[in-house]
Image 1: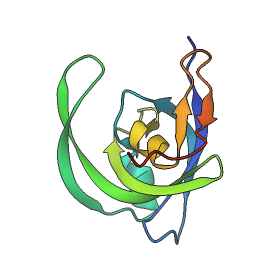
Image 2: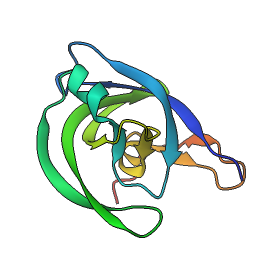
Image 3: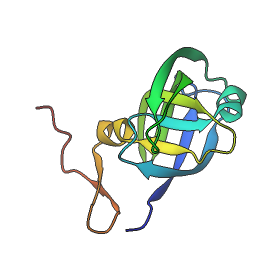
Length: 120
């Protein structure tokens, strides 16, 4: 199976100011969205706390996080963004996907809009 990428725009939670636009890896194994720390700082996203995250290799590390507006595929949501390492590929996590009703088709790794966002 191939990797799925989508263009994502991040802004401060109020939706104002500069934006960071980049091709993000869609990662259904990641809960939160991640971008390079310097890019988040440049657009004015404030650090709100720190959390431990489990990496793909099973190790655990702590990252700062903030809150941002997250836009992709004509949709907009807001959520937690991780201040990631500078050389790490930006990641769009499953929380942002689910909050706007988009899923990843396991058959062909494409993004699909759900007919409705589940409230159950």
